[in-house]
Amino acid sequence: MTAATTLFKLQEVDLELLKHASTLSAMPQRKRLQTIELAARKVATELKGIVGQRKDAETEIADAEEALEHYREKTAEVQAAADAGEHTHREIRDFEQQLTSLAKRIEKSEYTLRPLRERLEKLELAERNARATAERLEAERSATESALSEGTASLRAEIVRLSRERDELAGSLSPELLERYEAARKRFKGLAVERLRGNVPSVCRVKLQPSSFHDLAQGEEITECPYCHRILVTSEEGQE
Ligand SMILES: [Zn+2]
Image (tube, rainbow, N blue to C red; front, side):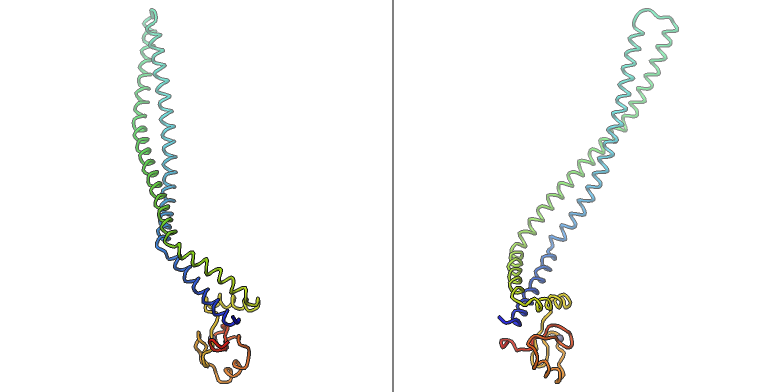
């Protein structure tokens, strides 16, 4: 293969690779995966907030229960003391006052606990829902990834094959020419090389002036288009 033929073949392979890469990135599953990822992040943030609130509620409930337990024990103690032996009127009045005050505290603790327990129940439900949503999203992500992987298996195999072919073609060009090609490829988005057909370059299609056509025809086979500055091959197809 001549250098000119190799250049065209390389360009063909590169264009094919570009096309495959864009097909891959346009797969509908990719869009779906992005949507899933956003939803999963949102749920994770929500879940973190819910878990924090749930733990706070549990702490508040534990504190209130501890206080309640303390007042109940205290009540039993006072009651036991009141029941033991004879007491003066004054002592009996003191016991009664203590028991009344403890009963009020117990009532207050129970009153505090009710809404706290309701709140905890709601938070536990919200937490279960959020965890279920997170699991559902994870399952959907995994299924979408499998579908994407299956749907693109042949395409990815083709990309691997083309990449190997590209390496071989690139390796057979001189480093200088390869460097020129790579620079032109980036500059012209893949269409780096054109061929002179008659006196018209195949990509930019700007008809050459007779004088520059004459100069180019006499010069190197691989040169530069005077108009668009792509790599220009001056030989006819199959005749290089
Ligand atoms: Zn040109």
